Length: 116
Image (cartoon, rainbow, N blue to C red; front, side):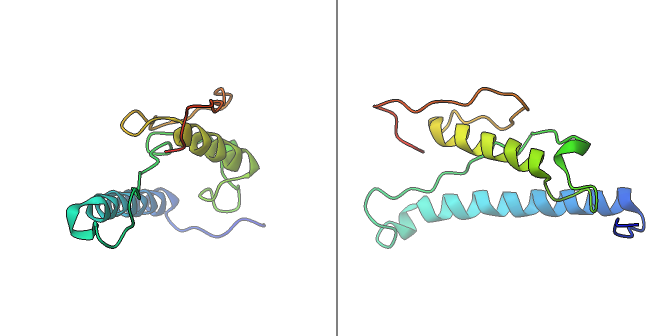
C-alpha cells in the first residue's frame, strides 16, 4: 500500500494538531513582540508584521489532504489555503477572517486598498 503506516492515527493526529496550535500561538507572540517598542529601532520605519489567521478555524475535508499521510494539503487543500491567504491579505488588520471555505469568493484589490 502507498499509505504510510500510522500506529494510533487518532492519537497521532491529536498530537499534530496540538503542535500546530502551539506553533501558531508562538507566531502570534513573536509578531506582538516584534511589533512592540523594544524592536522599534531595528524593524524599519513603517514595518509591521500581521498574522494571517485564515486557517485557524478552517475545516479540512479528506479531499483537502494528501491520502498518504492525511496531514499535508492536496492540490485542493493548497487551493483552499491560497484562497484564504489571498483574502486575508486584502482584509484590514483586526478584521481578518479566521477561516476559509471551498468556493468562497476571492476578494479583489481596489486602487486605495493596501495589502496587510
